[in-house]
Image (tube, rainbow, N blue to C red; front, side, top):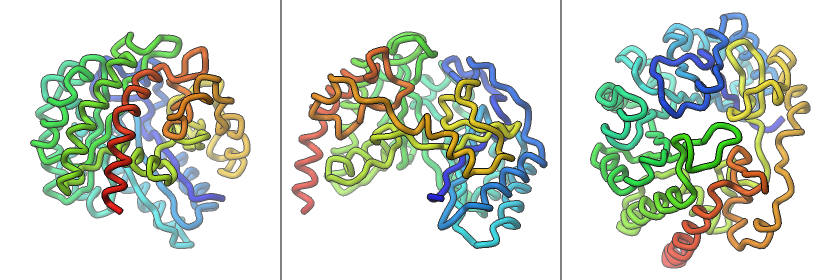
Length: 349
């Protein structure tokens, strides 16, 4: 078995806020809180095959709704079943509203990497998610307890028009690890509708934020914008780290709170159900092979000189032609950023 990366949804689609653009809420997922027996089965199955290292990521909905006790018990189970002493990397994606001092102390002690959802500025955040003051207070608590965290920002159509303002605010707050992901429209809906950015808006956003990021990088200030970091590696000839930039999809092994398993967080639906965690990881991997290979690239992608940077992007972004619905935005961004990155790489040698 290769090193494992497992995404666990301990509270399924339950959430304590009502984000207007949430695709998981729109799919009406709610399978309750993960029971102790399902958690134990998941941990037992993970460490039956884990070798070298394993990433365990908790996501939702809002995973902290399972309660601090759930996470304490889960880590205890991992310590008990990890008889081969493999490296375990924990991560948590959260809206931050339940991160009190006790929770932050636990996260620090167990070296969790936290992804904190915050949409750019208080005004933008509150227009889609609410509670910006509480989220920023949670960020300060994470800092106080020494928890490593990054800020994840969902790029809606509205936010895409404020790229510079968003980047400057996040930097002003001392956030050095950033992620920007495009807001996905519902299945069958085109980008540019239902809160999602159009290709033009997303491309312009990437260009504006990139210029601020590369300006700092040239001064020796490395702000980790995950997509730009991965793009820099791809331009230099290294393998891209992000799954949507690769030649094939990966099996995320998404474990829902009831123990059902899916190959990707974007495809937790009956058509992509591959079994129950009680079936065991090797069997589930074998059943997911239908998903992990991307379809053949459309002609427009085969003829594009930037294919090595995206390989047609995430399949969840594809339109009926098989290319990304954000394709023209990415093309505009690549035309802008690629020569700058190549010069930066050459000057560093």
